[in-house]
Image 1 (spheres, rainbow, N blue to C red):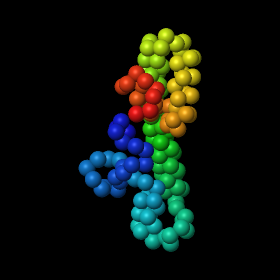
Image 2: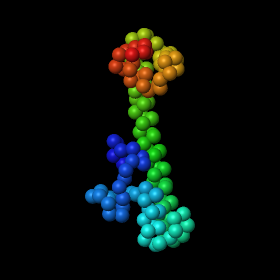
Image 3: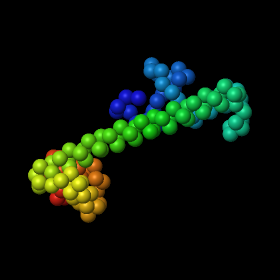
Image 4: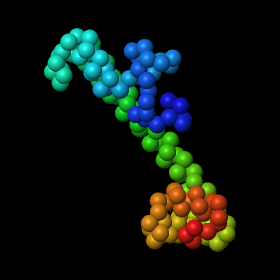
Length: 129
């Protein structure tokens, strides 16, 4: 998955749509299987191979979602770490004190820690906008 893509974003179809070879969503596969094999919608009359493919698509989607969440968490962690460093340098705080200040300011302003951290890196202050 490309860094700019999000899990569950339009991945096209492995059924020949678009120039890229990407994995279709489960609903697309189910609709295609229903159309090709003339099964009634929701009847789940899939062959073992089709059932395996649908399960594999679900596992892939889950893995892509988890990877995206981990990438976001890593980016947020870097922002928070940088903000802690800025607060440590400007206010002569320990790491724990700087994180506690960031956390308390985040709660007081009702903003996510990583959002406040980005602002601290830019401005050097935990004060609102």
